[in-house]
Image (cartoon, rainbow, N blue to C red; front, side, top):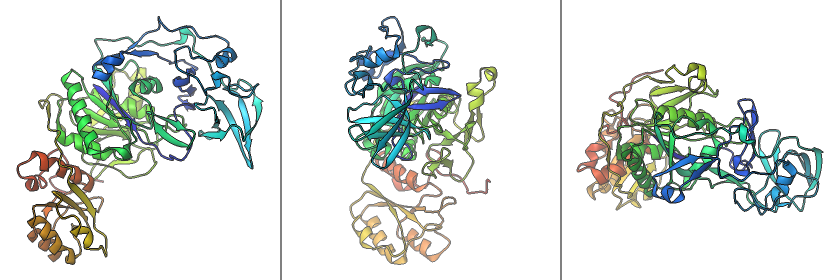
Length: 524
């Protein structure tokens, strides 16, 4: 099983990231990037990566402790050290002695700047210029150090130091466990805060995510590689190809499944792309995080754990695994070509359009040792089983494709400017309509060789251009009905069909990867 990492967040103008305190399962959790322990219990794990093997994509993350230098047991002494025990430069960190005398990370402080007052726990900072405070509401705030007045309200409110050796849990390679390759694409789970701007910046690699989600330990043997380091709004078709190639290589090398942690904003596009590019004999599961790891309501741990569980299941398809409800109980498994992000920030933002999720993962059954014998993954529909298909990759794309949303009063010049594109997906109204004045221009595009496919702006239902005169005129102009394929999925599908099918227009009317259903029926 391969795990590919990345994710988007909500509230990006808020100051939050992994370098912070959050509450998970009743204990305080600090980011291990600053070597702050989990207590109780301590779940910290240290892994070493064969860097050269990681760049090749075949390196294993190996946990070990024998060569870790001992850190000072006294917390304040550790914070005053000018070099980090693991060799990381700490210039600008609290430990570099750049904080005012008498203040230590973990102290509860009141910070005043002008007319604004913040109260919370002082955190280590990655910059000399800012103090970082964890507010009671769960967010972080960065404050200009020189312009701030700080009062220490309580010293050592939270312990900030290295975990004792006896508290550490070690994960060893286990031949009985499936293999998981960690491949990072960036995003919220793999992000930290840029305190210059207050924005989240993707900076972590796969190893950091393992540190950030210790609950993944003991579930698989992990192998890692980095494909990209970006937030998902920066995702582009060339990266889809790289990702598909990486997944193919990981499965070819023996991975028992693939988990792709990806930014939520464009996850459905990438999931669709991989569904068309890959014939996979194992599960390929996308997941991400709507809320960053330091927030009390973060969904990163549950989503990642459920995704790993799904990747060991029998469902050999491209899936999206995200919260099924606002509670931390079940994750839904959506077919990658039928899923849509329908909310900006809600944890259960993803929904299968036109039907129920393909399956679900019971988080309680996954996380409770007493339920170890219970099958955590349930399936509610037809699916391709593990091993049913031979591994194959068709990663070529024709990127000369556009997705155009029709709106009332749309200037015909918008269509005219698309002359020369190889493919066009129109998001029409209702059953698949546009203004009748646009139909002659569409006919010209088709005559010039553009494949034009019609989808609907409606959330559910299918295109049927044989009901009204407008629809029949569109069919006469050469427009292809995309059935009930989602517009975003149709856009990706047309890129793939143009590059891989002899008759891409005909392919747009077929279901290639579960993107179109045989008929639209009530399901609620």
